[in-house]
Amino acid sequence: MNKGVDAMNNVIFKGMALMAFVIALGAMPEARAQDTTADDIETLFSAEEDARVNAPLEKKTSEQADAAPAPAPADKPIGEVKDLSDLVKLSPFEDVAVIQKRYLPKTKRFELFAGASGILNDAFFMSVGLMGRVGFYFSERYGLEANAWMLNTSEKQITSDLRMKRGVATESFISAESYYGLDFKWTPIYGKMAWNNKTITPFDLYLSAGGGVTGTNSGASEPTLHVGAGQIFALSKGRAFRWDFSWNFFSAESAVATSRGRSMYNNLFLTVGMSWFFPEATYR
Image 1 (cartoon, helix red, strand yellow):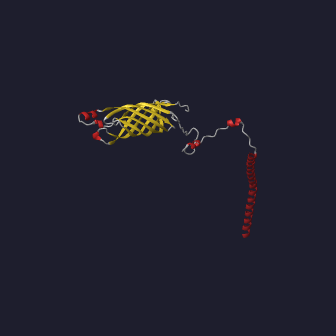
Image 2 (spheres, helix red, strand yellow):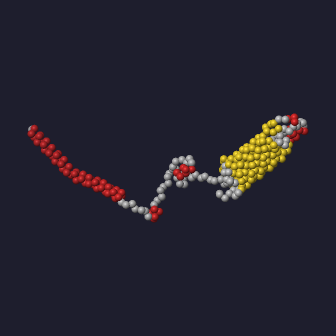
Image 3 (cartoon, one colour):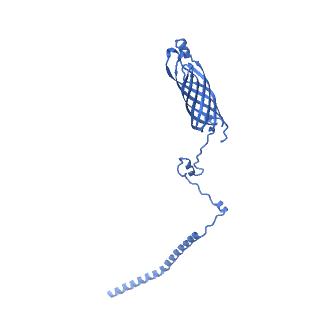
């Protein structure tokens, strides 16, 4: 009985071994084919890479260069613009920095101004008159300017009432009749302004400071401190409309014997007029 079982097991084992051998023989050609195919592909890529690396460089003809597509612009600008040297980093036609020159150039030019002026803060006198200025600009921002005021002064109603009804000696009241001085002028701001959405006018905003002499109704000439601020609206490269506020500070002594003593005075002027610039600007 045992011998029969052993014989059967031996037959089964041999059959399985024979089947495994047959399967192995059938799979070996496929494996060799796969290995051969992979080797051929790798060899093909290697040969193509060697040919590309070792091939001599060819020069493009002008027609090929013209036909070559232009590189696409960057999607975003490179970096942030902080000064003029950073402008070269901007992407074309995306971020454009425009620095415009002044429409009305002033460097190495003279300015001649004529206008009307009046004192706004005098409680006892009405003072209006003419003003003239002559200035020279060292640069677009800095210049020197000479000023001259000639004023016509008349009493206000309150002054007449004090003299005639109250008996007040109004001769002791000080009023300005003239001013001559020299200023340093600084123009820190310039831009453009629209008028009624129809006309765009370039303008400069300036500050000035200096000193001079105020002539008073008492006949004295008093040292004066002057500060001012105003705007120049360019009508052309040689003509402009100008207005400003000027503030004069001085100390004066009354001519009336009963009111001797020096007091501080200040005059706030509003001036409006026209300016002419010369020589002609040839560098714009």
